[in-house]
Length: 225
Length: 101
Image 1 (cartoon, rainbow over the protein chains, first blue to last red):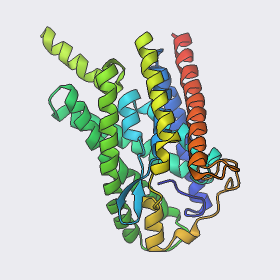
Image 2: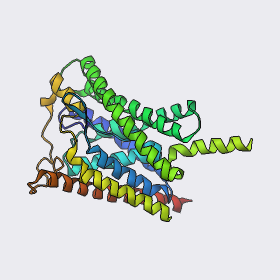
Image 3: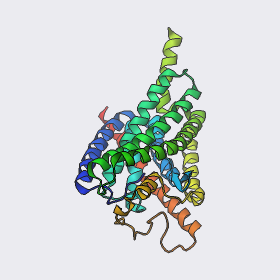
Image 4: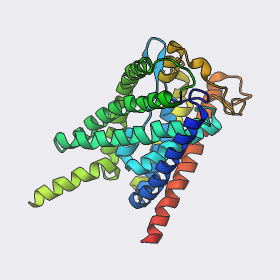
């Protein structure tokens, strides 16, 4: 999913770098109001864990692999603002240290993975959580589906960028079909890893899980009524 | 607080293990985007990464011949660097929020 330099032309890359920078600025502001003494170290651990798991490419089809993006997972654990920042730190490390993801493509990658992946993942999680029973296993089910949904959307972000400023001239619909098909399969892996990781944190420290706090409040209100 | 620290340390050690040891067994097939780019035909438009000669380029430590060690060491360095930068950032954000209130 990491776009190298050259796929997308420079003007488009610059434009998306601007959008990415605005997204990161908003996230810095949002994270300030959500992070406290307990959740700030968890946000650091979330970024660290995502970096590690992104190294673990799993096979999805003949000759194709995929890896966790982590946007939905991070948003459920620490909230969407801190999640966008966590993903951005991971992308910076990968681009600067490991030559993974082009440096001129950084804004494109931040847009797809730190913004689309996180916010589509988070919105899906909230919507799915609402229709499921209010218990801990629903959190894992919602995490699976949020992870699954977030990946094709992030892939669609690339197709949008390709449509605007792709340096090659293959048909957009061809690129869209191929990207969505492949990334739906990768999304299944994303969903499984997200559900397992969220489930593990829920089992040991459910009080820290951002996406679970709302459900607890709902439960408490109902008890009082 | 103790429980919190235990949890964080366990998560950090797990991350070190995944990036340092398990990463060796990761699939080396092209990822989704690379595969699509290759199949459709725009993979050639990719340019060499500006850091492709870097010490840690492509998740290996330059100079370590053994592939398993090279990948593992790069993973461990990445985990430590990511943990340092991200935790530092989030702690600074958290502190500022405390000061404003």
